[in-house]
Length: 164
Image (cartoon, rainbow, N blue to C red; front, side, top):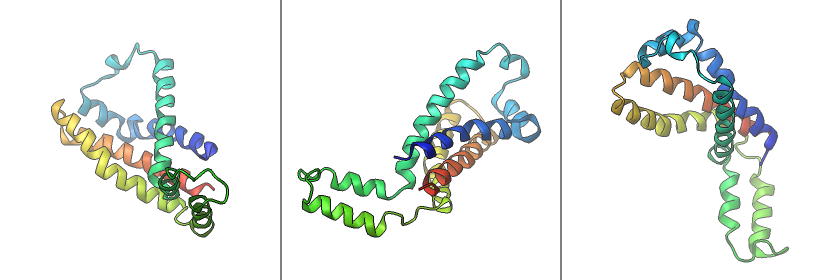
């Protein structure tokens, strides 16, 4: 697990959110679509909001690594073998050989972005879309939020997958 990449990726939601939800980008449209105004946003405990958001961002970055790096699955497949931890065992040697051959395959920023976008379209969109329908929010609200998460998760995936 690359904790430096995860740490950097965990900052992405904050940075992208600051830019994306700025009133001159989509912030004004988002407030209108969500039924919020400046008055409703005042008085919140921003330290708690940003602190919890950062913690959740770290959690997202950790699972994003599993989504964008194929080699993670190789380890989980072979690690369940009873002899995996024994030096020289068949599963241990197979893992080492496969990592030697393919350990850096598909480890690029571009590949991580690709998986981030696919994950956003096939997981985030249905998740947020379902919630928004029950909350009686419109299509614009869904697209604004899915747009944010698609950009964010794509960049997180790119950073995590592209850093050795």
